[in-house]
Length: 403
Image (tube, rainbow, N blue to C red; front, side, top):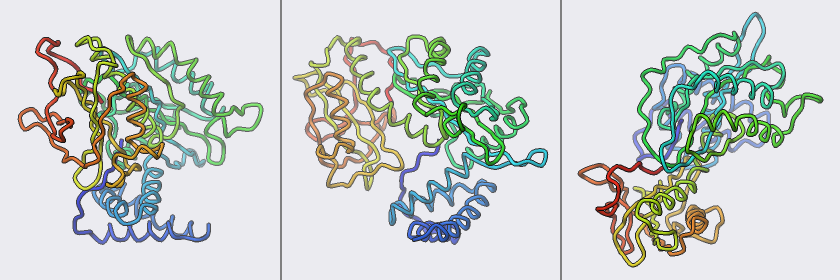
């Protein structure tokens, strides 16, 4: 998936400047007619870049708007995502609307979360559940026969557009999905992570794609669709993820659901870490002490959470709480607990819910240091140093990483 965080500024190309100018103009528009004018110009430029796989220009424009005009950044990001995850295609003199879907499974375990090729029975169950609970009666479906981890997902708008085009053809023509899946990257072993099934839904232009868009009697509200989806898919997914606890989210547009799954897995990462430390070193949650600090070069890109045994300054484990493209924290509010939506408040709540009551919070921004020898992230201690997390010598040697 495309995850954007602003990078150091570089000299802008004319294409970048045009994208930025159009995004700022659209953000400042005062009427729907003007909106349409600027949006059309922006979409034409973005589509040309997507077709030529010129992702660098799109990323540079996102960087620039993120720094100078957050509303324009939202506008540009929305337009780029829309063009990457949806399209209209002509087939037999009729137009079809297509949307790329992410079907998230937010999972955690004490063992390992599987990924890889989907068994036939899971593909068939997924198709049946999409048709009965999610898609409108006239819609067609295509499903990639693979259970994706986040590191295997498309990492740019350009790659996502190619995937959307491939699935659009398969859905509209009711043909086999033609993708090379054998060269998929290895999945990093973590104990709390989302898994995704990727699909596309297609319907004749102007007709509903989803059941909540349809007229009665086919109409079904989102909440009803979600419950039906979860009930129908519980058994097939449980067979796919033995030893895992999981939550099924409503199938929705690709980028929206990727962000939602990423955010929902963060508190589960803390819960999984506490469970892991209890089972590995025999320390109950009330016996743990945590230190939390924000890390980034010019702004907070992530929070790192250190776990120690109460009474000891040694960091035995660490969890990363990443910030995503539409999350930002002012450097003078890194330690904010007043705002319920602040990352520090969410982290503190997640630690409390996991049973950890001793939490020390740094108000400073740490450099995003990694270990020179092994490349592992360093975690903050109470004194303000970034240190290596080391399990006790008598702990099991090989352990999975956390999200």
